[in-house]
Image (cartoon, rainbow, N blue to C red; front, side, top):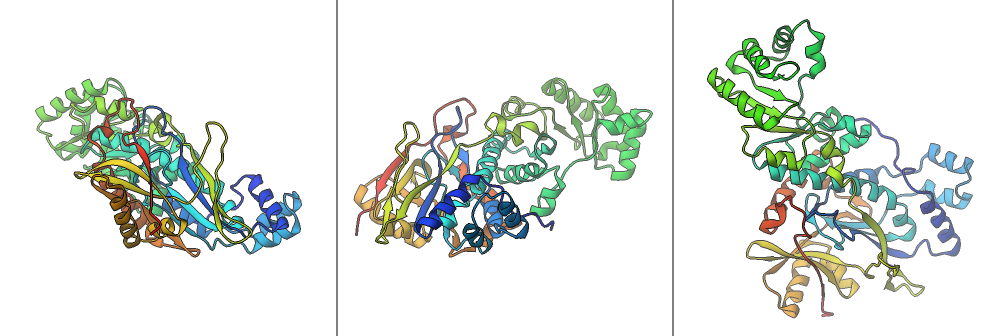
Length: 462
């Protein structure tokens, strides 16, 4: 696997200058709790999808200040020598809990909770947010696309519309939300994702005529390849594709024109030639609305580029990383909260749950209360179940509470189940299950409010 540079300087300067000041005044070692959440969904969206958690954990294991980073910080006089000494030995030794990657999320609920010293945790803000905001935006858009496609596969092919490494992240996030493959080879290698792609219009234009281009592609890639038939005339292109590969042709691709009309015409042409097994894949600036409009067309798969890697109009989730509790001078963890107009936050550690009634999600639940009880509720499924049983008895709400937080990092040790290819597979399965239990109207593409209300419940003291 390619060795990537340290992500330590993919950050904002003020994180290091805050660290310098805290080291000087003695508060850097105070235990703190930071939460990642969003105050609102993008306009019209009914739910979001948590993605990028596995990438955050992978980046955390590489978050080191080596000689090149330290030399540059010293040369630029970003921080003083004492801070450079601290950074040279930096290792995150705290704990992280959060939503299982792939889970649906709603406003105000903490999708990630980072606990450690102020010095440890404050340095992670920009890295955590840059990963979660982008990946979750892509996955949220991709989920709308796979929902609109129903059982027809969606294929990611948007790398050329994004930064080169963002293309890898986007491919991963799209697969979390149900995409079946990607054109990006690095994403395929890094995360064991199926890769797709055969030829572009340039290959057809390279040859003296379409027939020789198709013959060349079939000779090189086999009859089961996909031939792009709209470089010139679609009807003639389909005829030439069948002449080159016969009825064993894998698929034809349409990349322009009125895709719904063309798909019906091409299907009729293929069937008339006895090529009933030849599939039709469509591309050309598709988004979730275009996919939904093609629901009754005889299309077998969708290739999506620009819209998925840009979040289909919502390229960020607006997630923030806020300090909600910190140790005081006596070593007691105290809730803290920002009170700025329109940017308020709720102080104190919180856990997260979903109220389930009749097999369907009914509410997003913020769980508050005594810190030790809230912390225990996020430490394991058994502890959460015990805490939520007490909460349900106190609140007497309908249905039951499903814990959302899972341990991700314990005392600096990353749980590797959430990383690499196995992490992607687990996240994709989590998303399938999570989306299936949302309210029935949650998957509509029409603009509306969040599919679930977010409520706050308080754990009793004993």
